Structures are given as C-alpha cells and as structure tokens.
Amino acid sequence: MLGLLYNMPREELIAQLYDGLVLLVLGMGTVFVFLVLLIYITKIMSKLCMRDPSHPANSKAKAEAAAPAPAARTMAAAPANDDAAVAAAIAAAYDKSRN
Image (tube, rainbow, N blue to C red):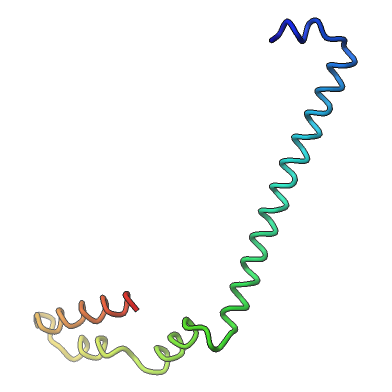
C-alpha cells in the first residue's frame, strides 16, 4: 500500500488527499447539521405537545394537581406500623406507575 504512495506523482497525491479531506468535512458537517436539527425539532415538538390540552400527559397532570392522591391521604392518617396502610400505598403507587 505504501509502495503505491511512493510511486504516485506528488501533485496527484496532494489532489487525492485534498479530495479525501473535502469528503470528510462534508460528511461530518452533514451529520452534525442533521443532529443539531434533530435536537431542535424534538424540543419544538415536545413544547407543542405539552401545550395541547387533549394530550394525555397534560390532563393527568392537571387532575393530579387539583386533587391529592388517595394513597397520600391514607398514609398521612395511618400510624407508622400499620401494614395494611403500607400495602395500600404500595398498591396505589404500582397502579399509578402502570397508568
């Protein structure tokens, strides 16, 4: 492989190295611009979805902010060693994580 480089005229070698460098910069520049656009488009779409009142995440967040969770009221009223209250809190947290 190196033998080919030694036998190649200097001008042709420089031209090929220049062409390779141009391709490298164009390729990496294209990928960089695409990734930057992807980041900003994702952020814009996220903001648009969060502004939409019919989006499920917004309706759940508003409903939870309006009324505290029943498990939180149960745990606040229960003594610390009440196993039934702890089991109810675990079940409520598991149910909330699945929905």
